[in-house]
Length: 222
Image (cartoon, rainbow, N blue to C red):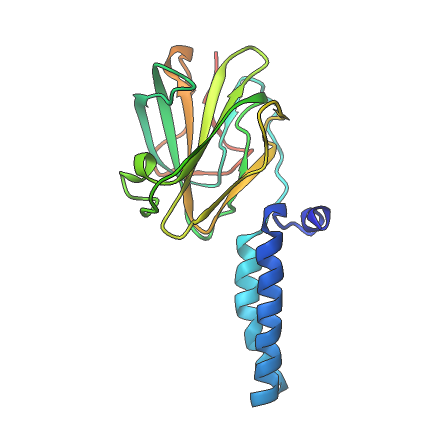
């Protein structure tokens, strides 16, 4: 089923939701047709179209720039800050926070080539993703990558008020190509990229800028 979903441009992580939505919308169409006439069954196409739109997963052309860090998510840059890095990185880090609206593609992609060295689930609340306290208090999953040159970066998937399920489909030891899909946050969320300050990264995005997972260059490594 995952392969079929990928072929038709849908996220492989949404199989259960797509199946449930198909059954529910089919039942709605049947009930409307019996009660009000055949043409009213078309009303059921509206919620079905909304579900299909949310779980879309278009192919992306990944830039061939080994020194570039790519956006791990679609959305808008909400903040660029120097913060205390998660324990996996140590020290200080530059954090690029990306807010994903319900209209954005929600599939997460690897910001660089690397091996999964760190994977950590963090239990928490479900504050709105735009809330300044959400990065520290909401449910999240940390993914730490070490590049072929030994540099570490971290991506954090953060749940929001509507996003109640984080999918991280890789395990420690897995190798990810630059721009490769690795998970998804369902129904509105926030994704963060942490780059160690000691690497002296050059940030290539601005606050409010629209970025796309696997294609937008958000930073450059030395």
